[in-house]
Length: 339
Ligand SMILES: [Zn+2]
Image: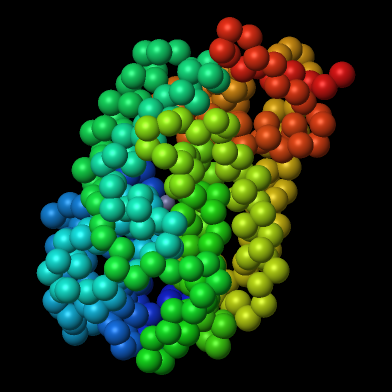
């Protein structure tokens, strides 16, 4: 048995079954997890589509259960591939819905939240030199994707640091923002297993997307852009320091069996990327969009917000270290090497 199969078998022996559900996104399938306990629990749902619902239904049937049998649905974070089907599943089963307390108001007003997130993203893109045609194209894509998610009513808000008790296990609720503001992981210290969702993924580095803070009012843009990568790295440090962890079950791809080594690799990667950006700025001041273009070429156009978030995250690290400075002229920000 290879390492991934072994890890999944270990999870299954603990009553946790990985169900990979198709998504229309580049990331491929999303991992949801059926936890055979009392209450019968599902972590994450897959996107809001008939294809995903069919796949989930037959995967659950493969373990001898029906959607109607679900009693608790846990949401790991606000992204649509994790949240999309929650309300359909809850309606069909009558299951309770548990999620981070701070996510509950956002999930209840999903459409307004997404609208406000989009206009926030547009203002960040303008400020960092993304031309209007690219910005409008991206917003159109985001709007066409919106219905892969849906609003959800959280009936069991979870406080960070609290315990979610099932009959046979206790899951410690840990807030790990960075990839999104609501990232929550669930730690079963007794079994040394973490349900980690998108906080730490083995085969790809989780994107620290710049997102509107959950608590921000819907009608007023937040005064300052959040420092997503710095937030993410401090979340990674907290996870790295965790004991009683042998297995992290992620939201995409294979289980993570050595989280300390993987997190150290991520830190090295981010340090290398920050150095590279610093070298570019040694030659001349650049906008974040210009930096993204010179690092990733056309991907900086097709994935403009993602790559912009990457650059800004690293710029934040360099600013914090005093290696670069931010200059603002006519509403556009340029970064320059500190003299
Ligand atoms: Zn995500």
